[in-house]
Image (cartoon, rainbow, N blue to C red):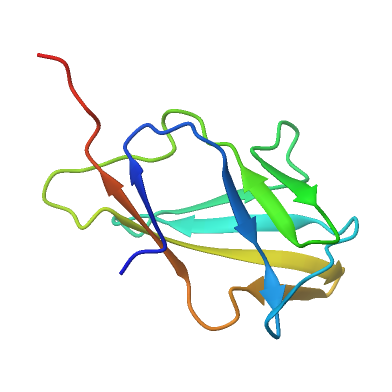
Length: 117
């Protein structure tokens, strides 16, 4: 079972609720980063501190961040499982980062885009 299923090239914003011990985590003004690994084991990082962030905190007290991907972010490849593993880290101090989800990575399945013939 996948946490999300997206079509290749989707640019729809995706909101994520970050919880710690089962409760929404108050993000305050702490930096957040989303780490993503694709089916080729290539890692990407998106951070709220990027110059032009694709990841933003949309409800700090409620623990919600929103990722607004560009068209090339979610790729589908023939013959691959096309599952992206995603997790988040929050910088609580310069030496300490908390990981979210606490137990497993999120799994995002990418399916082929519609093609006009």
